[in-house]
Image (cartoon, rainbow, N blue to C red; front, side):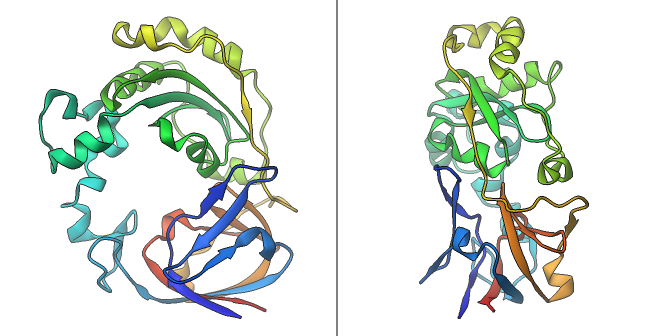
Length: 264
């Protein structure tokens, strides 16, 4: 059976283990059901997630012209402290920016390759943690807008990492951490504007991923260069497909690629 569609990040369902779904325009695949099966992935063409044209993808599933124009890729997406909708100040599209920025946001700790601090909309918990491949996570503060979350993250970056090592995450070469203690120790560094939003009494969320075998030396698949790949799927973690030969394929990094996927 062969499926064709444009790649977007896998949808997830919080369960034990996490359920993953690859969603196309007219079909979807429960990727958990593909575990221990040989699948083939073939590159067909590009399809920008904004304009829909067959143009090389620049970043985040968008062609270069769209990336530098649409509000979904403005600097405040990656740097929440640059958010200005709370000041009624437009960056690219004030209506969109108010919709996204002026809603509850969470500053959290997640342990994927190490303990890191991050920001996401409250509505994206625990999806954000799953996408990062975190096996445990905890909320630190819940604030009413993205700006407050951003300045809190910036303040905490001096005392905790803000990046994930994808190879370490995929090898599962990680240790459990007491995130409640981490949260409590970081409380003193929260900016004054966000101190009232500190969450005092919560516990870790633990996440189990559907992985049969972890790779020892993961190697990333460049599908546009290889054009096609065939391998046995042995795990899914974060937004990565893990194959028996230790090849890994990051769905999120390949958004905007039209592919054929066949189960052999």
